[in-house]
Length: 77
Image 1 (spheres, rainbow, N blue to C red):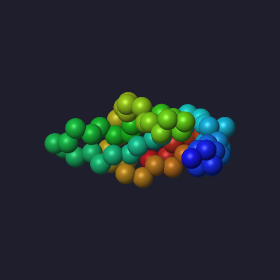
Image 2 (cartoon, rainbow, N blue to C red):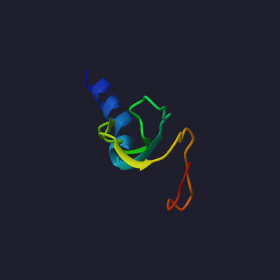
Image 3 (cartoon, rainbow, N blue to C red):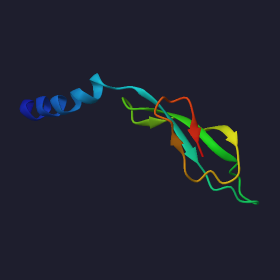
């Protein structure tokens, strides 16, 4: 039992060491009758595996594809 526990802890160690919070951008399909309004933003916590509640970041029509510029300053839709 101790061997299995030690193995499990060693497997999870990298996730604990490199745990971080990352911004997640979500492009949605905006229809005339749908509740979606455009681009949403949330935060992913890799230490817990949880995604925060989404917030409307930009109200735009049909941002189905998103790409973040390598320097992180511009989000393309």
